Amino acid sequence: MAGAFALVAAGIGSSVASSQTDRDVLSANYQTISANYTGENGDAGAGATVDVSRDFDRDLLEKQAKAQVAQRAVALKNLQKKTQQRADQLKKNQWVLPVAGYRLSARFGARSSLWSSGTHTGLDMSGPSGSTIVSVAAGTVKEVGYEGSYGNRIVVTLQDGTEVWYCHLSRFATSPGEKVDPGQTIGYTGSTGNSTGPHLHIEIHPGGGDPVDPIPVLQQHGVNP
Image 1: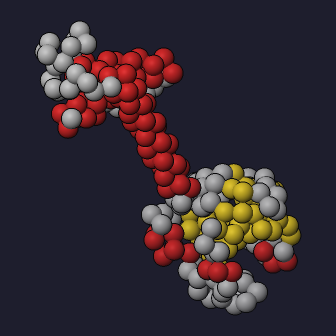
Image 2: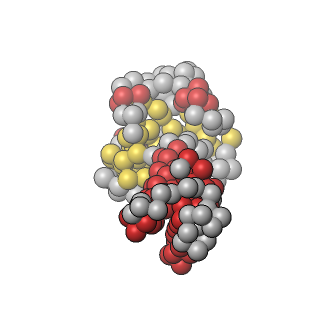
């Protein structure tokens, strides 16, 4: 019996690619099981690898063997589905750079009279006006609008409650309540609010609290600005 089960596993191979392949695989493996239990000609003494008593219910055996093959195919399909779901989940948890074609022009904690608080609370990434800004990670857009010295601002709440602020935008490409993925366009760089030139000012607020240095947080997620 164990040898027959091993033949079932070996016969199945990899996941089924189409409905026609499903039928072919099920048919082939059913025949393999049936032949090994009952013999090529339906006679357990005619070359069968498993000695099945002649008073055994062969119809029941064949029915169970066919069901076993079908269940194996379903199990493989479910495993393939779960694997894909896990890959999709990992992809959504990845982080990416929020903008391209930039230079770092001001870092977190820098002091200057240019900033209303006297201390810089984010990371400035300067570049051409109108550059595409994307969400650094998966989340939900919380706020979109003008916010004083921050100019046009988008706030995205990530899955762990962290808020990411994107400031000084020239225009928006999202709206409150929208679910965004990493790398999805949400707006474009500008120089609105308290700004001396086009750039993205990005802030990271863990749990929606006070801002922290964006660079270590980005690096923790595999992004080096």
